[in-house]
Image (cartoon, rainbow, N blue to C red; front, side, top):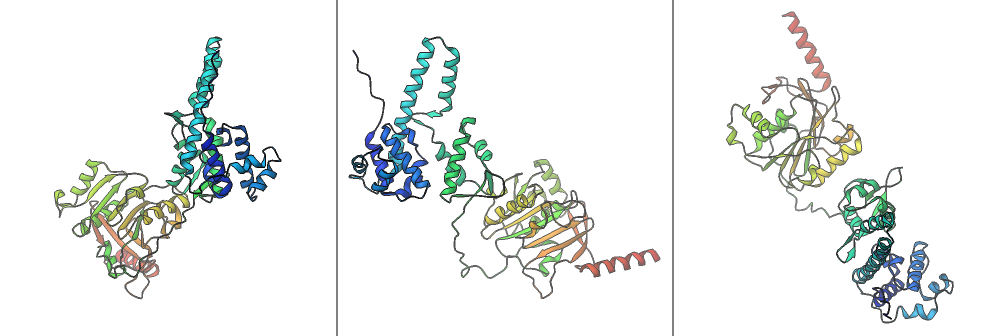
Length: 441
């Protein structure tokens, strides 16, 4: 009679993991991201690991005596004591966790294959189909089961802003609806470890905790402003320094692109300029450039990219980045969050961002929050432009709120009003005088 083969297992690796967990309870969370109690071959090892997890979650002190008491004498003190014999605190959890997980996966494969063989011999196609689906759902790749928790952790580390359990589920490859409870459990563990934190009032909404903050080297920062040429004589009013965000908000077809292209024309000999367009194709860009009568198309020095989302991923930190235009929805947290991501990617460079705005509104879609981190915020109206916000004034006079009449000819030439920048009351008075004078004439 042939002896029954012993299923794959490694008791030494199980012993090392349990020993580490007893000696260094703070590493239990790392173990749980790799294996669960069901992955242990030895039944008592399963019980001990399950008990250690429960004690850790309950903030109970973990030592040989407390474990013995918590398990209510189901495992002897001698058996627990042997787990820490010869254990080195520097042992690599990843290595031994992988060994235990691989052996567990192999046992699952054997058990599932045995069930599948039995169902096939009995001619039970329904049962065979269920078993094959279950085998596929285990996400077995090569020698070991797909490490779902590791994939979740890597995905979380790559996120910015808020995310949900559904976002995580939809972004991971090879997951099935059966994995949803596991995803929720892993995210809960990450929350307990302080890696993520819940936000908002809805369950399952999180953000990555960014607990690193590089120190700013302000002592060695350049003192001089950047010689970036602004339209409409704005350089007489304000200075521009490195790591600045400029916003140009305007209604559709009111000259935002013309203003941005003029910035490129006036600065391309001094800066590396990158133009990201969300609405122009190559032919359209060529046509817009050809409208500038005083410069040949081949003399333009800038790079053009088609881009409509996640601009922060492609920002050139030390160059001039012009985004025409940013669509980030209508909510304040979407617009403000996208602008902050762009700003955070800058070193000494500039980001000039066009925003769509509704007719008559001063701010781009997203509201007043879109001005929070801007060094300069311009709002373009039919026939005029207004300074909503300006930092780094060149004189003691605050330019915020000033308005200028403008004219854009042939979608390329910018013409400033003869009266220059005026505050609202003066601007309205000039308009009224000119209107009345014009009527008398």
